[in-house]
Length: 455
Image (cartoon, rainbow, N blue to C red; front, side):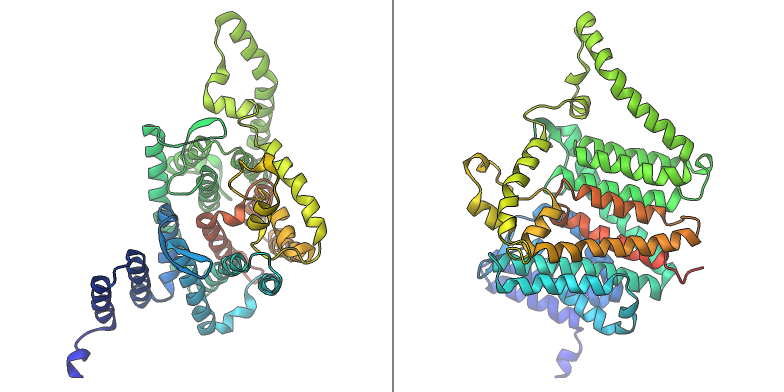
């Protein structure tokens, strides 16, 4: 017995992992065991700040999202699923340990009602396995929001410093990989556009929305309540770099998100600059087409041969995603009308769509609604959609109450919620897991930063 006392728990776990790896022939289970033991050791080392380790790792580990580890009935377990399950278990432990702070988490009641409603839908779900998976994902979003809120309340100065360091660390590899893809021309060729960078994520849109989130954090830390001339060159250059990353993803919905964000913030803090930029954008679209026609007629030069300009100014069958998004919505609505109150079960949209779509949509192997509101209504009915929207409305009203008493210093938080609601009209934001984890973590941090009892 005294022999084992010489070893720490971490040492025993590490030795057990080595032995398990040697005797176990399944590589997937080896990776799963490695992840599990690594999580336990890191939690012992960092304590509650372990949440930041998970957040830092999530964007980079998304690169191995297709690495299969194991299966439980019809549920396939990959690295991302392992992270999700571990976060879910750890969050339960965290909330039990910090139960005295639970009552103060903003929108807590409506969030929990939404999660419970999603859980209940497994009773009648068209795809019970997906319902379990997606409900855990939804619970994790609330968990990240609540954990970061509580951590910020408990130790505001330290958590803020470490949280900002963590988001910088989480962004380095995805952004560097995105730059490499651009210069090596190894980005995705989709929607009629070549070399769309995507970093370590599954799709360019996820990198675009992640970079947009980084822009919001940057603006909140450096640009609010300061004269533009007094802001250093580094924050300005970094903001331009992130906007360039968003541009090179060719994600038009993210471009709209950038524009909406700067309009929201600019009309509060930089009105003259915002009005000037809006005027410039309007003039660009008014003058571009006659100017481009002039260049074509006189110099045989077409500016739309440049991919970025083409994506911004051209509507065609290959690149126009508006048409097929509308087509999917029109074909989904009749199915939705059959179960408008309860829906088909949370997370069931892909299977229902695959089993009911006609031959004209066989090519669409994404099996997505491309609209979170349609997705939520389809899966959890009008009740689920009402609860989902009420979460955001609750946050917005709480932040507006703070804003009117504190000179709108929280405008970035309000703007980011508005931008998210806009993006959700045309994208699968709930499935942008690496980005959405960080989004709700940032919102939890901001919700603690901008709360009514603050003076």
